Length: 96
Image (cartoon, rainbow, N blue to C red; front, side):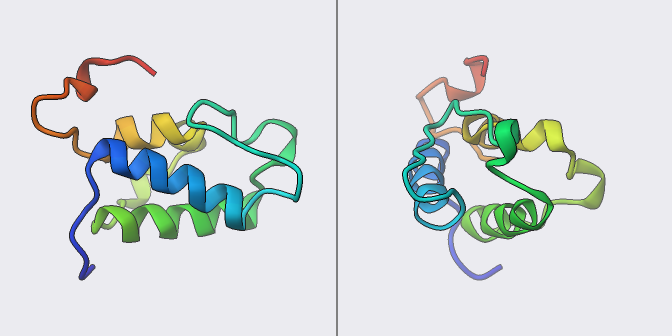
């Protein structure tokens, strides 16, 4: 992975924007807390795109053992699971 990783807050904002632009149907808007698998917003193909986006955005490879639906249930939970908190923000202490 060649790009610098995004911090927690930036990852949440950009991932919500990316999902709304590329993964969900027209007329649907998700936010950081929208359940992504509810109602079929994210299917088995789209979750692969989301995993690839997450790895690229965070400049890290997600080990196969950590690729579980519960880690990808909301954008906020993805960030809490994989993104480093911004120094001094306390993001890591906030429950999803």
